[in-house]
Amino acid sequence: MKIQHPGEYRAALYIRLSREDENEGPSESVTNQKSLLQSFAAEQGLSVFDIYIDDGWSGTNFERPGFQRMIADIEAQKINMVITKDLSRLGRDYILTGHYMERYFPEHRVRYISLLDGIDTGIDSAANEITPFRAIMNDMYAKDISKKIRSVKRDKQRKGQFIGGKPVYGYKMHPTEKNTIVIDEETAPIVRRIFKMALEGTSCRQIAARLNTEGIPTPASYAGLISSRPGRYSGLWSGERISDMLQNETYIGNMVQGRRERVSYKSKKCLRRPRESWMVVEGTHEPIVDREIFQKVQLLLQSRRKTRCRTYDFPLKGLIFCHECGSPLAIVNRKNARGEDILYFICRTYQRSPKSGVCTGHMVQEKAVMEAVLFKIKEVCSPYLNPEDLLLTAKAILEETRKNERCRVGTRELQAKIRNLTSRLDTAYMDHLSGLLAEEDFQRIYQKLKTERNTAEKELNNRLQKVSFSAEEEAGKLTQKFLESALTSREVLISLIERVELTENRQILLKFRFRQPEPRASS
Image 1 (cartoon, rainbow, N blue to C red):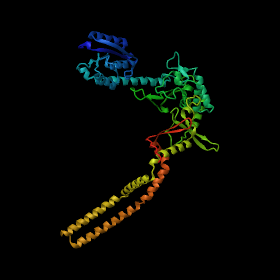
Image 2: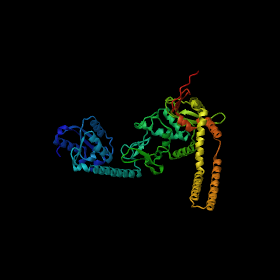
Image 3: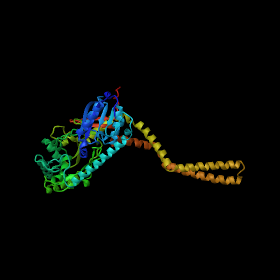
Image 4: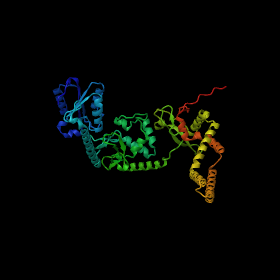
């Protein structure tokens, strides 16, 4: 291979080595790849702009730092040639590898060379024609490696060996023994305290609120993990987190793994597996919580789950938010002095951490808010609720309904029968005029067809009378019903209102989905 006009190129030498490739022999080492690429560049008289190295990165992952740095330099037009040892160094995902070779590199006028495969996009070559097949083979290799790795991990899970990145809160990796966890004396007391509070009857949400008030770092904060989607609850304990911990058998010495699995070896997205599919091995490490305490807590959680499965449906569900922090308002049930159930709105941020100072309660009766919202809606919508206009609309709807009803009860068959009988009468009359039908026969056939048609017409009229009704009266009832109840319908509320906000001072702010009419000037 001899490159024509080497002075026109600014080359990038790209090197990748994954952990799996380390087992393929010394020829795949970073040092050897670098030596091979530099020797080729020197022989061809190429100017090397930079060397890009991704050590320990899978070929199915194109978010490698070295690769992304190379792409940035291509975008900046600093590079117009990429050289790798072979195609698998560029990537093992045949879809993305093909994207870069067939689209990205040509669109950015970048020449790609794979030394061992003989691929050179700058010249016509038979090796270039089979490049897609090489990419597929590399992808199949990555898939095979993924299966082997998954099989090894499953085997370790069955043996009770820990294969995760970070142990659950309360444990840490053993300093010398691989795949073994030991108690973290710094966080284990907090775990024991959580179980103790739960055993005393404290709810998960109350436990989370107490930990937040005391400023105790969450498991993610303690582990130094950065949230991929930071929000208003980042860095705060939640009732869901506490509930998950209280049900985790890891705290009684059982190794629990396989709770999630990746969608594909090409994707980082994980899905939660059903509990019966988890890998649980008993007695693999020292417990933090006594088994008897753990079982009692499970009974408490189950009993609470039965009493707390009730949900509350209310018209403004999903539409009402806190004006100060923007979070959806939760709804709680409180009994008044007479023992009646009363629903209240409360800020969800405040509910999670009442003493953190992030927000305030905004506690107000759901009924009062609903009445105020309806009053505002009626005030804004009154120009559109003219009874006379609604009556005309109702009449049109009812007339259309009546037409549909007439068709539904089978009048089409009777109408077709009447048309057929009329046609036969016409034919008999024409045959009589032309002399084809004698007078006696004509009278007999004519009377018979006419009798059948009269019978069909009467039956049709009877059916139409059965479905007839007073359009005026029914339209009036429909209009009145709409005026009285339409605005309280959740379906109508959703179509009218985009958002309801409740301020700290209990002021209600409405955002409609339509432009409000201008107030009429007084005469």
